[in-house]
Image (tube, rainbow, N blue to C red):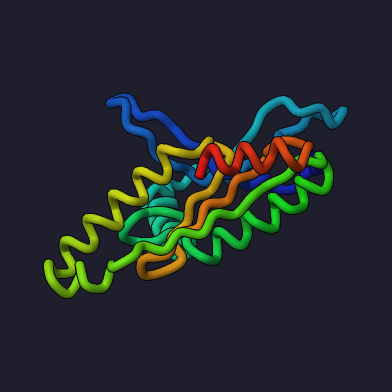
Length: 166
């Protein structure tokens, strides 16, 4: 792209032992008298740990630490995207809100460890009921939201699809 400046990009490399590591490559094209690229000069710096930390920050910012579901922030982002896509495609979507009944007494009686196990199980079951394009989120405590996208273009059919998933 550029006529003579440095290019910087990140790429995964496979080591001889099979491990994958990330490298940040800084490279500059070497040109002949006619301006044609005849090679590249550059250096690669390993950034595997930085990439791991970036992923950890992303996970903490957008996912619930207990269930690993999307959190409220990520769900709202997915909702905006789904609404924009729906306007373009004319396909309907749906939101399902779930609140677990009697969760507080369960936590109080059996302890938070048992309550956590229940929340994790609910998250797994909800994920198993939806398609790849859908989003399951934990809004907090015992509240979950399921975003169904790309349903039918016909309102009645879309409602039937949402009810079937629910």
